[in-house]
Image (cartoon, rainbow, N blue to C red; front, top):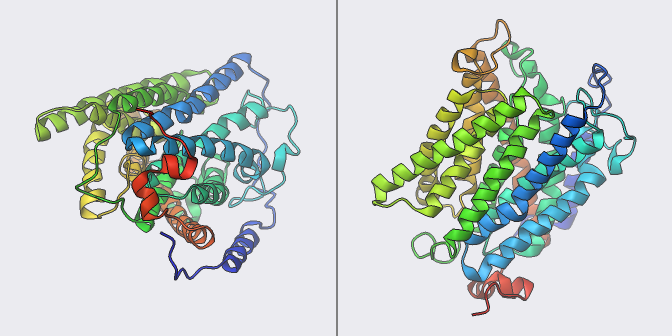
Length: 453
């Protein structure tokens, strides 16, 4: 419920926002905008990225919505679908209005700037260093901006106000996701980490499709939201199981197929890198499913459908940062390690930390993405079948760079997400009342029921 003693006020929120904008909107750095070699339009590359865009949108609607919807109780399934649908619409408009400019503008290494708001200054030219139109790159990246806050939905289901979802998502996309995307994919802060340590001079963070930008950011925000919201009634021992495991499997299958566009499309071309990214993505997911089921079988005597579906998501999340950098051996190792680490992370979060991260966003996506980021520092090496390290670069330096990038990402996501959660709490409140939670959010928040039985 909304805290009556929240120390934050609307004036504080406004002041914080103005201060943050002042800090981030620095004097443009001419050295930041680097010229790229001239390229010509490729119909094949463009067609592939348009296809990949559809696949990634398919991951959120309907894939993620059905996956999450099946995991909750029947009285809350429509609220989860509503959250995913609303997040898709909010992030799409925000991406056009401001977030794309922040993420992929060329203001400076920290903040992309506002020059390209509402697609200003962008015509029919190609995206720098690619053979696809900027418009296609824009919409492909939009689908990533949609699914990232969509993942966070799993942490707060069954007890959050819809107004809180809208406000938090709006602020978070612009102030957490977009700057992070700029640092890693927009040539910003983490494109050369020499400022962290001299040994990292010329070392760029390796995040092929979102271990940092998507999974680490979403996982950290999810954990904080779940902690501040507090647990659902009956947590941890008296919660009912997922109301529809079949729906969970259908959603997971859609996510799996969509992930081919997520990882394969991140090559931004129809080439060897895209093909290998899809290959290792599939192998990692399949391996994680087998290992997850084996753990359940040994531990509980029966492998479950929800378990094997969750294993798939763990394998997919973990391979994401390394998909275009590692080879098939990496895919096998990523999947096996993901299943073990994420399986036991769920118990740590719920039992040891006593946090009701309802649908295990942090344990599966956050931990999986972070794990994949570190593993990429190792399996990128050619001796493991990866694309290889630059001449003179060692695995130790590679791993150090990955850990440094992860630390920067987690600290930023944690600090800003916490502040945004508190602002949301002060302005609209976070949690519904006990009676609304008991009756279910479908009827109390949206006036509809999932099933009329």
